Length: 406
Image (cartoon, rainbow, N blue to C red; front, side):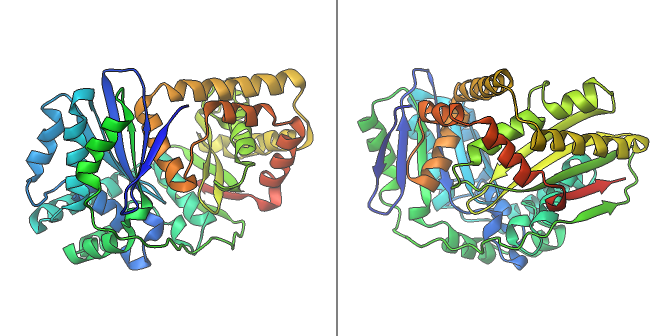
């Protein structure tokens, strides 16, 4: 993938990829997420993501909503453990409008007390909806169990008690501390000349005050496997089994991504889906996830089943883990697994909004982007021995953490 970059004097980085389409996508990615909160700030990064849409020095909330909607575009945002992204999709002639709006809400929000109070209730309702859905809640509680004692383990949404206490001053203090200009990347995917893109972005980015700061996070170094069972008044039993895994800076993350895809990835032909759903009919939803962070990563396999089938399902999952630890993939199996993963990646690159977000995150972390060819070459060079070694590291029974709702 061909891309071009520019750095403004205040440290904000710009990355652009030209793609032939009448639709453009752009976003500001900030190296600030829920992991950067203190215990008393739990949920603050997510509240800020909501609150920036509630008013600026020159716009009220309904003006912000209508700015892109009235020209057929849209603006949205999301918060993760380690970054926040504010992004927009639009017809390419509306790039100026989109860049200006994103900059206005990020750098000039006023956080009106009345609007923030209303938005707190929206977030609390969101938190409560998660509590009512064990299939969602278990993912958050599993990370909390794995990362016990570290801020990376806390849920992104926060707690109702914390959210209710936040003031405008809390929001502004968090932004001053974490929204540093050298920790921001503006990514743009649009069919437009790079020089013109830079000129448009410069009108709204280069005058932002320099606030360069270093980024220090409490590293996670104290993983202790745990087995936790929680009684829930639910129709199904829900279970997650997993372990810590390679981080974003570990080249083996590509091996782990391939192993995850084989184990319980999005394909219906994953080992766990075939073993639990296709062969036994024990579970409707079976999946596994691998999420790498800057200094750690996490793998988890999830399934929901009738309570009477819980122990049988756990035994099957452990059997599949054991197979991957003890038996190497054959040549054809390995080739098919690689082709499946690369095919999924190629199709994901066709989603230009997702591509824009990925560009922002990767350039933020690595100050460079991997080309698709480089990624495919790394995947192609993964051996069956590499996969087996990774499986023995991540799937070793004594290292596994499990969380079960029954």
